[in-house]
Amino acid sequence: MEGHGGHVAAEVLRRRGVDTVFTLSGGHLFPVYDGLRDRGMRMVDTRHEQTASFAAEGWSKLTRRLGVAMLTAGPGVTNGMSAMAGAHLAGSPMLVVGGRAPAARWGSGSLQELDHLPLVASITRRAATALTTDTIAAEVEAAAAAALTPHRGPAYIDIPLDVLLSTTDPAVPEVTPVVRPEPDPDSVARVARLLVEAERPVLLAGSDLYWDEGEAALVRCAEALGLPVFTSGLARGTIPADHPHAFARCRGHAIGNADVVVALGVPLDFRLRYGELGRAAVVHLCDSPEQVARHVALAASASGDLGAILDAVVASAERQGTRPDHGRWLARLRDEESALRASETAELEAETSPIRPGRIYGELRRRLDRDAVVIGDGGDFVSYAGRLLDTYRPGCFLDPGPYGCLGTGPGYAIAARLAHPDRQVVLLLGDGAAGFSLMDLDTLVRFKLPVVVIVGNNSCWGLEKSAMEQWFGYHVAAELAPNTRYDEVVRALGGHGELVGESADIGPAIDRALAAGVPALVNVLTDPEDVYPRRTALG
Ligand SMILES: Cc1ncc(C[n+]2csc(CCOP(=O)(O)OP(=O)(O)O)c2C)c(N)n1
Ligand SMILES: [Mg+2]
Image (cartoon, rainbow, N blue to C red; front, top):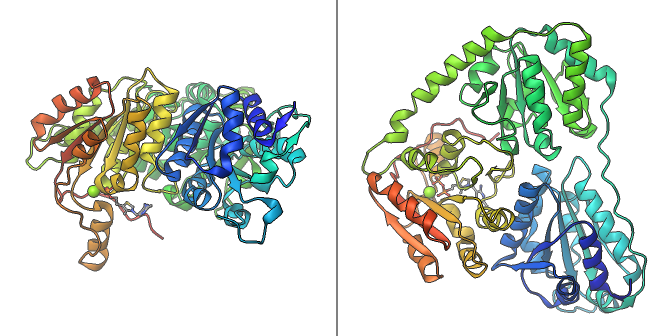
């Protein structure tokens, strides 16, 4: 193909199946815009590069395809670094195409001249500059392949403006197929034996199972081997919350009493007590060898395509001749699960004034469709959502992931509504979190994306306020102005906004927001004294 470098970059992305990119304007990117426009590819321009890059990461999380952000040279790229770091820890296949000051003037101090590579090297799977127009195609393709190859993550490519503007006639490379390695049969057999012999096994499924599209294999395995399944992160919904083998509330009880715990596609990090799981033998199943934990003694491990591993484990267990019956163990967990769920009724139905956050979720739960996309961005307010909302389909619950960066929500919501125009999209925002990217509600308005935003407005950075209180007996830097009218901000931007101060008004306000047809924000004033019960995640 012939054309300037921007056309080449766009063509490689088009062949990769990319039809939407997220950006914020900058002259260093104009030639790429020209290439995208020529091919009818959608450009979603945001009000801050952090939102453009969170939207790209959100797109990858929602579609399991490449999410692409285009960030202008210098400040555009540095504004996207939190999303790259988040994608790095979450294993999200995201591609950032950066602008770059002209190569011919490099070192003379042109506008926004910055070598981005050292900045992004430690948080990307591949970071490179296309130094000549002839290499653009191969570099963009290599970056896309690096992002999509398990263990996935962000990749970065930048192209100097003069290189983009030069004309070339390179061969655009074929799309490199993504290789998903088969697991080692001996490792699989060891895992199967442990599960066949286990009396109280537990399976903990995490985000990498989702990335490997292993949901059907997960359900097959749980049913064949009689395993209780707990999901976290993007694995929520890979087994529907109401499946007989799905559990959520009684994880502590299950792990505390298990003899074998299988961690599937999830790191043994702070969320899983660093793999120190009491008396249980720990099995780690990962999408690639480098993900297998080295900081804890494992009873067995295997790496490769996670769906293939699960199917191979079932086949191996069947060859070993026994079909374990864990009926009593499952019944015991179901009793525990049901009791814990029953104990939540009071908070879901609380009629207190001021409002307790649980009541918001009591109202929301009964209004959500099974395929609704729920996004959480905040502290305590989102912890409640994680516990009180159930997920029935994969890709329907997005939180910031292990990087825990506030401000992801509006970007994820833009991506969600674009990816799923016919579904409910609900963004749960802490009032603190709202301050990071509320202006991008304007992007939702401009692109006519009717997302429902519910702000849990406790007038403070609640999670940090209570944590500092616990540690030091006092708090600093934790208060926000009381009762800020985030709803009026959204009205000023052209959306629908409502303030809610009483429990009984929450449900009707959510109904109006869902029906508004424009981006809508329900600003719920909640009790500043309410503290989510948790152990600290630090350390
Ligand atoms: C970018 C970023 N800055 C700071 C933090 C630390 N942090 C974690 S939770 C939290 C409080 C969030 O407050 P809010 O969104 O109002 O939710 P609440 O806990 O009050 O429900 C803060 C500041 C973070 N995770 N990310
Ligand atoms: Mg708050």
